[in-house]
Image (cartoon, rainbow, N blue to C red; front, side, top):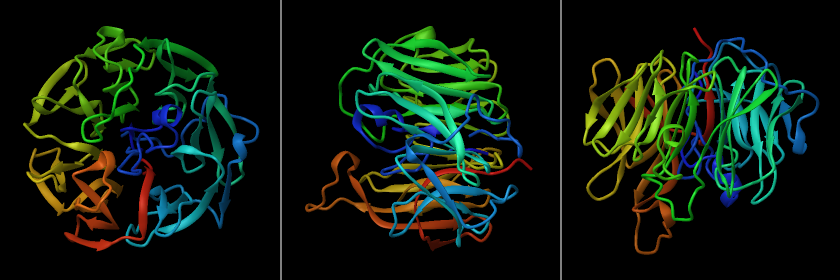
Length: 390
């Protein structure tokens, strides 16, 4: 299972410089999280060949396991992206480090890492690299670097890429398969405004069964139909659902095609082909992340004073339980372990910026669902995760 491309992510690369990565846990959040279940032997990504562009290199110490859960992480005291085996999430085993100007790093498969390159107002691209051989190449590229360019997601089998390319004329949704890059629709251009990290998000991700692509965002306005800010499409690009504006913080979860999201009523779900139903009335969840086995969604929720807590939704019973107070940005490293950041309320001398009313302490923890215990983690941030299909 791969984390969904989600939340103030790679699309900020072009508009505002480097930022949290869609589908990953990044600064005040990002990634990931991930929500598609790739096969253990994905197809080759579309049209990637040659050498990885932009001087990106992988430096591995040994073979990369194909049957273990993997994660792209940063370790305490280092900003270098690291590919690690997280079978024992309390003791991640570093396998490779990634160097070079790579943003929005994703795990397409154990043999393929993808990334975006972009600059403000300039051209950008999405490329892949095999960390074992340092071979790869460009999969897609764009000529303008406006806000939203660079958000992307691969299908569960790795054979199809969806990405956004933005300009003053609008935000284009592209599908790339078998070396064919098609513009599926063009959304309205993104107007200039501020960002609310607890409310704004952009999610682009394929369903776990690979049947649908979702685009859920809060930036392009109140378009309808093919220009709606909530869209679900088939792999041929045809529109299945074009919902109203105001839906945010979305994730696929489970084993099929069930899309969870937040709106004014609380948390709801869209189920193929066209059913919308209530899940958690009145709940304002932030940055939801599904478990690889399809049983849970972990999310952040703020208390009355603004202190966040990490909670867990049981997708079978619908029950919610609290895992940690003073915590945010949960990510499943494997089916039984949740990583999260520790937070505290902002004080008079803190520079909390867009992230208030709380601020990270710099510490992170892992929670073992089997034992019900948490322990401090050496993982400082999670960019993406990958769990092979069982």
